[in-house]
Amino acid sequence: MRKILSLVGAMVIAAAAVEIVSAEDWPQWRGADRLAVWNETGIVEQLPAELRVAWRTPVRSGYSGPAVADGRIFITDWMEDPASRTLDGTERALALDEETGEVLWTHEWQTSYRMLSVAYAVGPRATPTVDGDRVYVVGGTGRLFCFDVETGRVLWEKDYVAEYDTSVPVWGIVSAPLVDGDRLITVVGGEPDALVMAFDKHTGEEIWRAIETGSEMGYAQPVIYEAGGVRQLIVWHPLALASLDPETGEVYWEQPWDVSMGVTVATPVRSGDYLLVSQFFNGSMMMRLSQDRPAATHLWQGQSRSELPGDTDTIHAMVTTPIIIGDYVYGVDSYGELRALDARTGERLWMSPDMTAQARWATAFLVRHEDRYFVNNDDGFLMIAQFTPAGYVELSRTRLIEPTGSSGTRTPHGRIASRVINWSHPAYANGHIVHRNDREIIRASLRA
Image (cartoon, rainbow, N blue to C red; front, side, top):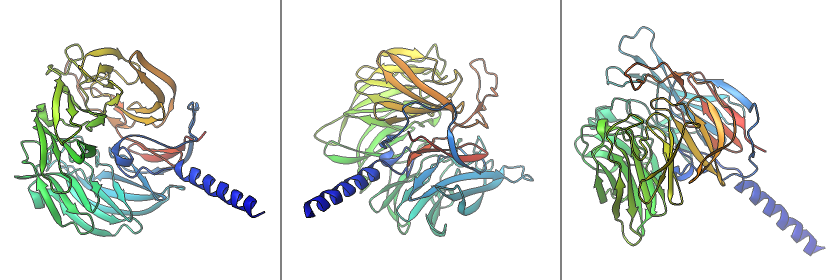
């Protein structure tokens, strides 16, 4: 009898463990470790014609994606002062109940986009970063806050412009804070030598600063990858791709690359020894990481300096972070073309117009789930797809959210486009997708 009870108890524990493994949070930009990988089980094989939306909660405008952790959802937004002539307005951080969508707390702060030369006055760009009982938020003009997740109380804060003489780039502050141990690492763009900084995550006290800030601070997210026997902080800025020691800020290696207009936007992506960055005007650059020391060698780099589809080579990514599968790279080019490259040489293998609109800065966000990818494009559709050296395979598609923003981009002939878009990265957490536009945030089930 005791053996039977022990066996039953073991089965219950095992079942509970499976349940724990099959659900996960999405605490920061691109999820756990910023890898854009969703590990949950029990997820739909095919998307339904209409998603099962659990709730909808009104929000204001913004590009930032949601973060999900411990039963709460964190998001930021912005509302313009209707009487303002300088795009004065209010940025806001919100915490919502994950199950109900109820707003738990908010915190607001005043800002001026035009006075700080921020274009695309829509709202904050950076996804919140959750770490235990704290959430870290950066606004579009460089206001950094550390909040208590339960109450919204401000534990400490920084102002990049006032404290570090940051020149806010034309598209605003985009880089989300990165927690590493007791450090909070952020791209500050401080003058003269504080492009990237590490703060004590508990107190906000400065730990280290590194890299001279050039004419632009850039927009790419910092990431940490283990390679060459050490943990490397990868920072891509408009003058170079750099690797640093995340504990000290010491530079391990740098690969110079002068990026036109400072548009380092897509996140540096690593697979095996490959480390790839890609940008709108100058295309892609591939590095090979050393296996035995913190170093890298230059494999190849695009040669085109044109954004026009017929003149580009490799992949000229804007917002979309490419992916690497084996020896192949897949990503969205300058005017929405999905392209595949040989990771070893940069040679283009194929091109498809099927995943996104064929428009300047057309965007999609790619998240791996098992042997397939969940893809949301800026037309508001959610897809399940596979990427192969032979081509793009779309397995299913459904409407995710109504696009409500304006792209404000030019056509190849110079005309201002009026395409309506959605440029936010969703969160995949606990069997659901959480996504926002400029009017609402929704939570929809993707459970089988």
